[in-house]
Image 1 (cartoon, helix red, strand yellow):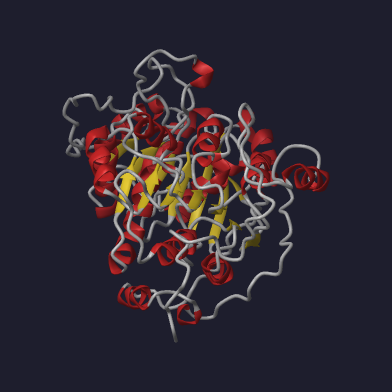
Image 2 (cartoon, helix red, strand yellow):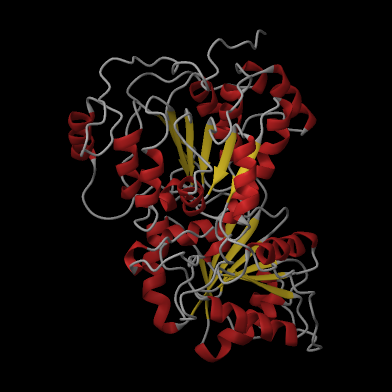
Length: 506
């Protein structure tokens, strides 16, 4: 098989694209990539259903290439194929098999697949294959992956590193909560691929450490969260700076109507692929709703946390997370907190402790709902029910990954039952409902709950970051208020209106 590619997608014209008919930006007008954008936007709007929630996926206009049965069937460099073998990656997951033939050919892609379905390699292999052989100038990367959280940025970096090394491409990660100087140095030295959260990348651009005009391949991972109104202005500002004829790929486990704005504006004739209906239950995942009395909820959560084996427990606020973590430690349970009030080194250390088993109960806000992969994690508990069905799906997606099995349990008090029923219907999930209390046999059977030892334990605290020079500060909450935590609250260099503040979770 000949893996040589005349067009890497990094320096040459975009494969399969006609240059004619593209609209140039006019002074005073919003940047646009498409001369036919108005008519296509109008047509796309007519196809959207009214109301809230997920939008109707556009259809693939130009026929897509057939799915690949094996990685060896794909037009990828031989070094990448050898790296896949070395990593034990033998067969493509469905979303990889469907999208890679088209993304390798330069097509725009809109992909939807449940968490753990293999989306990172679906876009990552195409990005690396099409960039292989090119060399970036200082400060001018050739490919960009935008993600909403620091944890997801690190996970994407870790997942792509062995393959990038195989084709001699340099990766740089740019996220908030870490020293900006080190990240700036990596970009100034030259990096072909940048994995970044929007807020930190914006800072680096404003400092003159990064220029996006040579970026010809752009990926939005977790596109639904990136299209959230708090992110959207930053995301669109960055997308407007990349090469106007570049390739765009949007991937997510759920797609809502805000994503449609990005699709209409930035994707041309995309290949659309959905591995699962976005709200479908994973067949290897069990869903349970536990009806508990208010007076029993705290004790029930404690007994679940005392199980043999690891568990992620989700709560709404960072203060609730800290309180429960302190209680679990005093009850003899090796617990640790993860939320947006922690610095990035603390968050990284906590995750490492959880993955190694030093911590058995990870108590977290929604910052842990995306971008965290832990092998053999078989239980997720919503101590506080999630705010919407997307949060439920992403929280639950921390278990039953890559074909493994797992359970999602939600504790619901009487006043929450009606709202929870609506949420589960929106998620397309049928859950088993059980009335439980402290010490119940069903509680033990489903979750492995048991009586905690009651002997206080300690877990070595994650290292605290040293004060930084000119690099900002660790992520902090908004004035210590008890609000739903999305990991936001980077300290700004100057005051900004609250509505303009970044909601970056990374």
